[in-house]
Amino acid sequence: MKDRQTYGRGCILENGIRILRPGFPPTPKRPVRRLALLLLLGLAVMAGTAGCSERPAPPEAPSTFTDDLGRTVQLPPTIGRIVTVAPSLTEIVFAAGAGSRLVGVTTADDYPPAVDTLPRFSALPMNFEAVAALRPDVVLATTQINNPRDAETFAALGIPMLFFSFRRLEDVPRVLRRIGEVLDTEEVAHAAARTFEDRLAGLRARTDTLTDRPRVLFLIGDETLFAFGRESYIHTLIEVAGGTSLTRDLPTEAPILSDEFVLTHPPDVIVGTFGENYDPARLLAAHPTWHLLPAVREGRIYSFAPDLFLRPGPRLVDGACLLARRLHPSLPLP
Image (tube, rainbow, N blue to C red):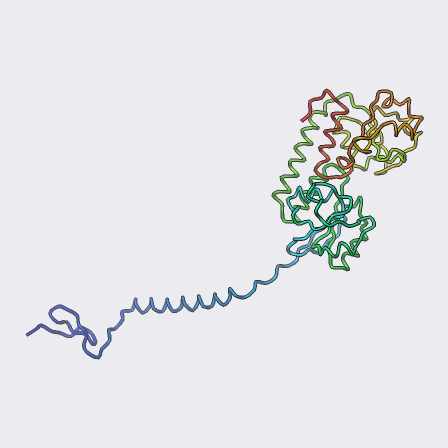
C-alpha cells in the first residue's frame, strides 16, 4: 500500500509527491499574495498618472523687467516676436542671438544684411498701427532716440515696450547682457559682451601710454555743427582711440558749435560722420574761416560711415579702431 498522508488543506503527500485533493485549490503563500496586491496597486497608480498626464499644464506666469527708465514692465512668459525701434538695438538683438525672432525694424535699419527681408515702419514719428500689425511680444527702444511717451500708446495696445540707455561705452556690453536676460539668450549675449570688452581693453592698452594725443573735433553735421559733449560715449571713444575730445568739457550731450568756438579751440583733427566718400572741400566751403586751423593745414579731416560711431552697438569698437589708425598711423593696433 502506498504511503499517503495529509499535507495541508486539500493536499496529500503520496510517495513523497505533493498532490491536490480533488475539489481543493492550492492555498497561496503569503509572499505571493503580497506580490499580487502590489501589482494591483501599481496598475491603479499608472492609470491615475495616465489621466493626469493628459491634463494641460498650468500657464507660465508673466515676468517683469525694470528698464533703464526705471519702469517695471510686465512681459509675456515667452518672447517669440521682437520689434526694434532703433537700429542700434537691432544689431544688439542679432549679437545676443535672437535675430531670427525679429519681425520688424525701422526704415533706417541697414545692418546686418539679414534685416533686408524684414518688414519696415517709421519710428520717427512712430507708426503705431504698422508696429501693432506685426503682433510683437515686446518692442525695444533707446532713451536717446525714442519718445518715452510711446510706451503709453503701446501699453494701451497690449504691447510692452522697454527702453535702454547708452551714455557710456560700457553701456553697450551692459545692454547686451540685459537684452540676453529679456530674450533668454544669456549665454550668447554674455559672450558677445565679453568680446566687446576684450577688444576695447586691447585697444586701450595700446593707447593708454601715448603722450601725443591730438585734439579731435567730432562733428555730426558739416553745415550745422552738431557735436558731442562730456555726457556722450563719443568722448570716451575718442580717448580710447588715443585722442582728446575738443568738446569734452561742454556740459550738454549734443551741443551745437559756432565757427567762433572752433577758431578759439583749434582742433588738430576734424572727424565727421559724413560718409566714407565725403569731400572735405564741402566742409571748408561751408566754413571758409577754418582754412588756418591746424587740422585743415595738415589735411587731417577724416569722414567715416555714421553707423560705426552713431549706433551704440557691437560695432562701436570697430569705429574706435578706425579712428585710432587715423590718429596714430604708426601705432600697431589689434
